[in-house]
Amino acid sequence: MPFTTTEPPFRFRRGTRPLLISMPHVGTHVPPQLAARLTDEARQVPDTDWHLERLYDFADELGASVLVATHSRYVIDLNRPPDGASLYPGQSVTGLCPVDTFDDTPLYAGGAGAGPDDAEIAARRETVWRPYHRQLADELARLKAQHGVAALWDAHSIRSVLPRFFEGRLPDLNLGTAQGASCDPALAQALLGIAKEADGFTSVLNGRFTGGYITRHHGQPAQGVHAVQLEMTQCSYMQEALPFDYLPALAARVQPHLRRMLEAVLRFVESRKG
Image (cartoon, rainbow, N blue to C red; front, side, top):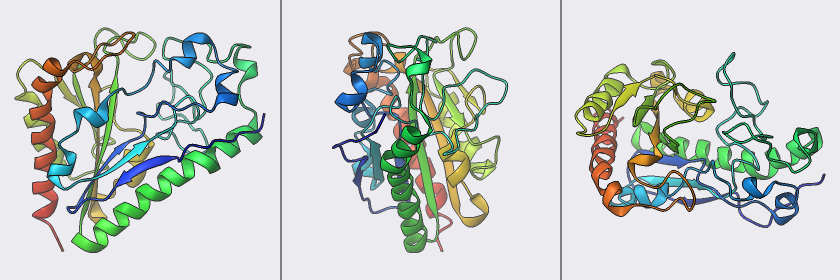
């Protein structure tokens, strides 16, 4: 099937300090021609990283740049390699252009065989994936040129219980640094310390989620670019089931800890400027 979209691939706000916040899974747009092929469940885009822009509404105050996806991960997953290689070999994962939900149910009304062929995947990649990653790379390069260093914070959220991907309940704050390869170890430990001090929230560094393609590809600490992924449980700030409402009172408990972590990132990289 041909793929077209009228929606821009991202929204972007340029900041003033050496920090870029990427939100690759907050998009909900599915072009009508594609939506018509999906199941009723899939059209609800339940595997979205809901409300992260609102949760991180302090980003502008910090002077961070913010890059936000517009299209659903069901169109194309911006945190997967362009060739579709698995991020976690041997474990269950969803692909570059998924054909199933996190609950392992088909996305397409006609089953997995009704999913995109190679030509459609290539069109989605060129139309949505590449522009997002081009903007991400260009902004990191700009920050590095201006400040001598740059930090990338890849913001995610997920349901706290997903048997397909992990046993039991996920920790609330899952920091990932590609097993230490995507940022300075001292920064990772500082962030873990803040997460551990967050009363009422559990945390881990490089546990089930160690960072996806964005963190692994763009984090180059030896070149002054430090990348961290945070995968949060959605029950920390919202309803995990339909209608997926934002819960302001709950979110207000975790927001100060998020802000402290991002302030720590900025302190770290700005202490190493040029």
